[in-house]
Each structure stands twice: as structure tokens, then as C-alpha cells.
Amino acid sequence: MRSFLPIGALLLAMLPASLQARDYGQRGAVFPVIERDLLEQIHTRLAQMEKSGETARLNEELKRRTIARVNRPDPVAGLIRASASRSWAFDPTIALAADIRGAKGELIHAAGTRVNPLDSVKLRSDLLFLDGDDPAQIAWALRQDANAKLILVKGAPLELMKARQRRFYFDQGGKLTQKFGIKAVPARVRQNGRFLEVSEIALPRRKAQP
Image 1 (tube, rainbow, N blue to C red):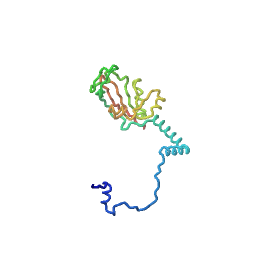
Image 2: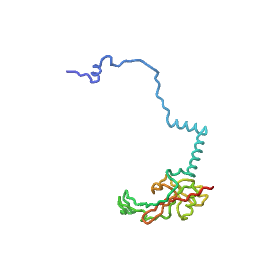
Image 3: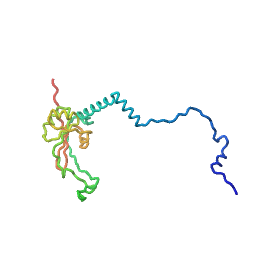
Image 4: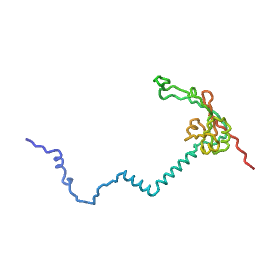
């Protein structure tokens, strides 16, 4: 009966002697791999920060910066003071991305239907956009309809609310001015039928005192 070597042994026998395993001895110190637990490192660092007072300092700094951001949000970038008056119509019509259904599942509007929100919800008051650091724009806004919404693109809304006894809003991130295409302030948005009328208004500049 013919005998067969296991394949592993056969391959090993075919290797030259120079390629077979040898013991080269110890060539350097060998150390075990030791890693500190991540949570332990975090706990130790937090304890050090608490002990040194760094935690309290960071909390106070966060509080200060938060209050400062609330009192004076970042101004909307890219807006200028209007040097010429201009107006245009804004169509708020949108195409629905999904079906709109009622409480019982009945279809109200199918996806893709174009809907004008002004057909069902009217704009209750004018929207006035202004620079809260410009006294002329503040004075202009306060002369308009008392129900108008005053929306700052720059300035301190809480400070103005206290001083003027009117509610001031802020166009955070410039979302509204970008949507309406407003490039300069003061500006007004009001309803005109099924459209919104957007106007940038150039205010007269005060003459320099001699």
C-alpha cells in the first residue's frame, strides 16, 4: 500500500534548509502591552480639572458666552444699508413632497401638487427687517404699523425690547432674508393677494453737522 505524507509536511520538506525556521535568540527587551481603560483616563482628567478649578472656570466661560450670544446674536452676513429702494413679488407656492392626508386618512393633496399657503393662511402682519444698531432704522420701524413684526439682522434684541417696550425678533442665520432674497435693510414683507411684496427701503441720510 502506498503511503502519503501530509501536505504540510511535504511542503516543509521541499523548502531549502536556509528557509526553515531557526531560533535567533532574544534580540531586545519584550514588554507586555498595557492600555489604560479610556473611562479611567476620562475620570482621572475630570478629577484633576475639578481639583484645579478648571471645570468651574470653563463653566463660567460657557455661561458668559451663552448669555452674550443670546443678548447679541451673530449678525446676518452680507446685508448692507439700502441705498436705493426696490420692490418685487415673492411667490410662496410650493410643490408637496408627500401626500397630505386628513385625520381619517383621506387624501387632501397628492404629492407633487402645487400649494400656495396664502390661500389658507394669511400673513397677519408686515415683517420689518432692520439693523438694530442703526438709530434711523429703529425709528423707521417704530413709525410703521404697531402690529408689524420687528426682525433684527444685527443688534441686541433683549436690550431693545427693554428700552422700546416692543417685541423684537432676530433672523438667526439669515434664513428669512435669504428666502425672500433681501440684500439690504431696512426691508418690508407684506401680503399682496396671493403673493408677498418684498421691499428694500432707502432711508434719507442725516446731513453732517457743520
